Image (tube, rainbow, N blue to C red; front, top):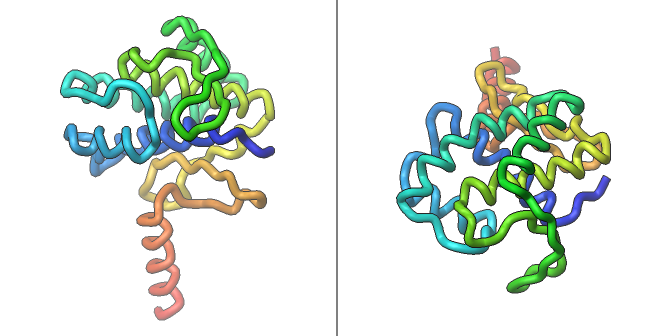
Length: 175
């Protein structure tokens, strides 16, 4: 299944946030939050100091959405949409063509992230694509893997884990 660009971006940013909670925590400062905001193209009010803790707090909720079964994810998604009174609208702004937002740009960043991720998860559920999510293949990693490849070959959550696996395989061959 091919996902719309806004769906893919919402899912990628959500997985990034969920994985940032793992040790070492990579979302501990305003600079890291601002980099996240810029890297994933969020619109609306830039994050301020009051946004850091609420964004950090949603990471477990995001992880639960991504690691649940298809049927288990549905109530989690619906809870987010109801909690924040999501109202999907087709919008176009900046250089981004028509896409869907379900919350306004003036809402707190953690709400925008949760709602946009939940909206992306709707497409995953409807397309029966929960197999796009898996746990990182590194034994000591709990990272979420989001695989948009055609053959679903992605095994590791980050290039760090990919490199660690390659190093381990190399050492095993040399032994």
